Image (tube, rainbow, N blue to C red; front, side, top):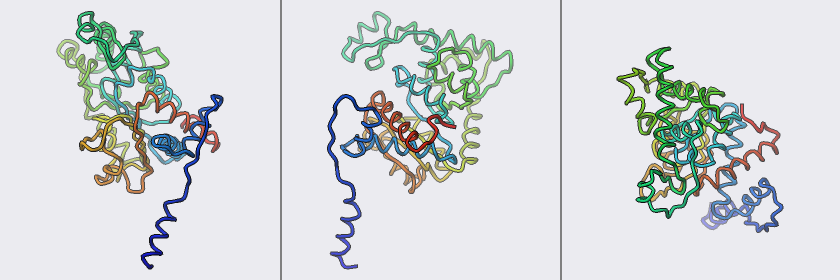
Length: 332
């Protein structure tokens, strides 16, 4: 092929869809808004629409084992209810998260209130009045560590009477069994028998209580059993897919184990971390391809922005697509 013909063919191959304008009346449904995002392309608007489409395809693909990975800070916000909903409705088969997620879910699950705050509050003053700040969320000190400690110690005493050694995911199912809050992530996971894996289980209040009470109560946690379960999942699954919110250990643990199945077939990243500093949290799916953690043929997208804003839009978008395709609005 001559160079000129090659260049013309290259232009035709990429200049396929035109950017379309749209207007907003205030009467649009969320489904219509996501459709406009897809047509308008924009910057992240197009990525939000693509994320919705990829997740809908992942949900409809019955051969995919679907992993939901997220960081603990989100559980301190009202987004906790959306995360629990996604589990309760069966869209995901496993969770990989942090001990912070467990802490916040237990604390709020037993009725400890979190409060609206502001980024600009004086942290020295908050310390003096025994109030923790997580971004613009305020947590009275007694509603965090003490609440988790009281819940955990009682549960450990009950469980050690049954047996001494527990896997991490079994322990978290037992926590979910004891929470009555319908917005609880652990309760939803227990009810659907979705394993919750926390590779950094000791990095938080719940994990600390395991250590503090080891000599008095004697309950032991065998995290190797969690990894064995993950290995079983990876090698028995035909395909793997993941929605990954945030970075750190929950993100890496998800893609790390996927490499042993030649990588994820579907991957949606939702993050605020940048790529240029070489961090795992900011790394794009294309970098994971080089490690074998995502397949070169995988359906992927990275969406930049605050999950408390964008995840509900993505969820609404993929539910709209499921309805349009006459697929299940709930998972399997």
